[in-house]
Length: 328
Image (cartoon, rainbow, N blue to C red; front, side, top):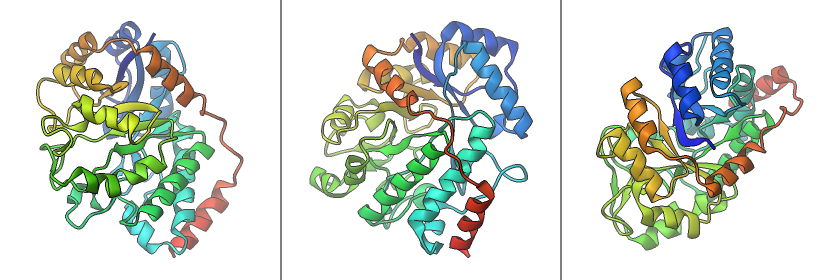
């Protein structure tokens, strides 16, 4: 069985140490960042070598939302507006969101990447932190749900699996979880009436990602990623039945060593932990504490991977022209 972890490789190619480590540890998959990206040819070699190291067609993911969160950039790949700017600018924002993600999927699939950490269903709030604000799709619940669904469908049509984030909602956070621990201090009833609603509407998606946020009225002691109370809420109240991965355990919102964070996320109920950054010693420490995936997690993972498909036929140049026309 695969280990309940997704590792980020260190550079543009797979080192001999990484080949040996990945073969022995058997992570469920990999996640790529800008440090791993140079040219299309280089990315195809990297994704092929990562899969060869573990001996199967392991999922390889990336954060290619567009806007600021975009690992693959010009001159080899298209640059996209921040999502909120596009939603406000497009004549048909839902169609534009589908086209955006269908074009992104074509670029990812071409280089061997088959999972994208998008769409986002977090709701825009007046005091949302700038790190999130223009990544979001809007304030209106119905519009956000429709846009997120369109984005997910566009990715799936292009042979790329979507990851819904950040469950159960990041919009009220006023600090950056990369640097500090956000605390949301509103009543549970308010969260149930607004923040959780988009995720309930999208709870059929096959994969999701947690939020490193404390919801004080539900569990004041731990962020959702490491809170058994919040993970039960995600499963039972929000009804999310898909594969749940942590957000990056390297973010400063979490306390303890990377290995302690990873262990806490698994103990709370995450199916997988994302270890995105860190050298060989840290990766080995995390691997020592992360167990093999549970039978339930393996079942959810197989259900997610069963959605991988050959991209649906489309004229990419026509899709790009339509996309540009909607933004003109």
